[in-house]
Amino acid sequence: AEAKMLEKRNNLQMARVRYLKAEQMFSDIGVKRKQGDVCIAIAELDDRAERYDSAIEWYTKANRCFQDPPRPADRMYCLAELGGLHLLKGEYAESIKSSLLAIDLARNLGDHHQHLTSLENLCWAQIKTNDSIGARKTLSAAKTVAKNHGLHDNGLARLDAELANTRR
Image 1 (tube, helix red, strand yellow):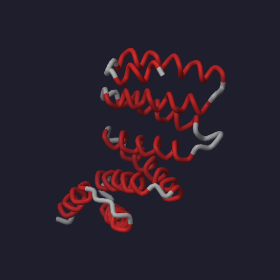
Image 2 (cartoon, one colour):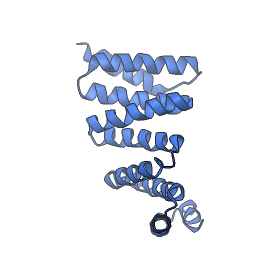
Image 3 (cartoon, one colour):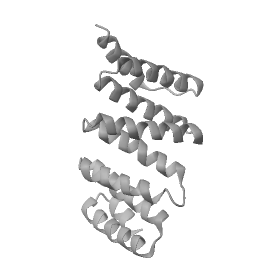
Image 4 (spheres, one colour):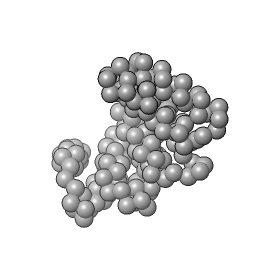
């Protein structure tokens, strides 16, 4: 609770210190659900501070915490964030792997927003790895999800434009 308050007050360094202590405590007593929640909080702070390698480590640790007992919605969130961070870092194979897992979980959970976001990340990673055929299929799936669930996303137009440039 204290870490959350510090975070709201934008005292991110102190918040991170408190979260690290809480993570260690939950790890020591074996409360994986709480440990995973704290790992996400640390990952989000690191992401905001553009410490992407550290954010990836914490989302990965959180994802492991949510495997047993299973927490698929939390795993989906971690995997989607990992897909985006790996994409940002140019680690396209890892982005594709995480995005595909997030897409499966989002589809099973009926989380259309996360489904769309992960499809977009996958599409960008496919474009960056010169898989224009895969990217076109992924973009088509993303458009279908957006249309079927009334989601509007400017990212689809950017992907369309990028794929139009790859046709040359």
